Image (tube, rainbow, N blue to C red; front, side):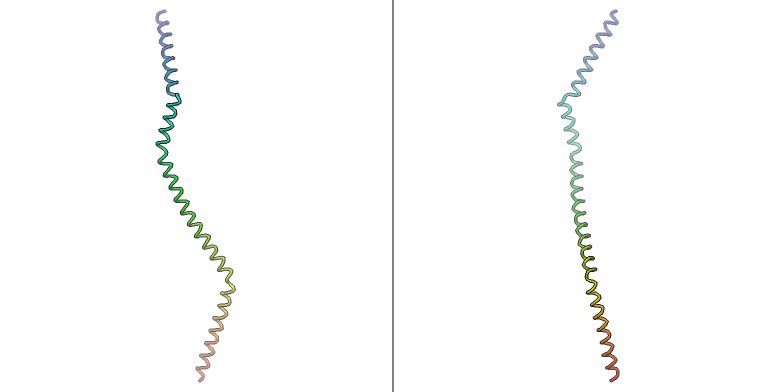
Length: 108
């Protein structure tokens, strides 16, 4: 009988001890401390990621600007095809005139 009483008392003590440890481990101040530890460890890495992303954003914005500028230049070149055709025609006329001048000077 003493053995059963002793086991009952030991069980009660261990149950109370377990409950106390559970309450202590889950106390809000401990949770806030764990949260603070987590933030302190992960914050530098997050800041580094943020600066990397900002740098990549700047680089991509520069590349986008360059591509848009190149596209507008190509569009303006396609719109100027009539000018190039006019230049081609004038060059052909100039070559023909030069040949005529060369031929007339060669006959003299």
